[in-house]
Length: 159
Image 1 (cartoon, one colour):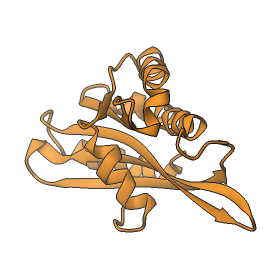
Image 2 (cartoon, one colour):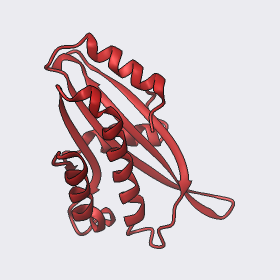
Image 3 (cartoon, one colour):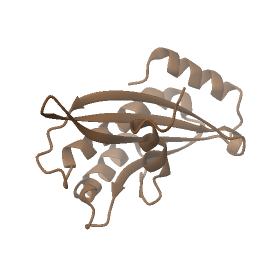
């Protein structure tokens, strides 16, 4: 997931911050075609809200992987890949962020009219089981819906 330098940068940043700091983890993806095959660009983010009032820093990882969802409007495999990536990031950061308030945001809508809803129940259970954290889903999942989305679409730049 994150490279060692990113982990070191996060740890160094956290040593200079107080306990009002909050950490938000999220992932989003964008589906695209290349050579007549479907792929997804995944952007996984750790957003550090410094001291609860001093702005934030976004750290991210981007990966490109084949997308095996057969139904574009029901992207369950892609949604669960996002969830797996967030859980992996939490596992990677857990030794360093225990003293901070951490939220996990999933870019998944619970409203059945949206395709991502097909994974809402499984995704929330997976995150709760792996991390012990109740994840935020849309519309409360801004770290994934805006932060990771901006990285995935190339609108935001991170560290």
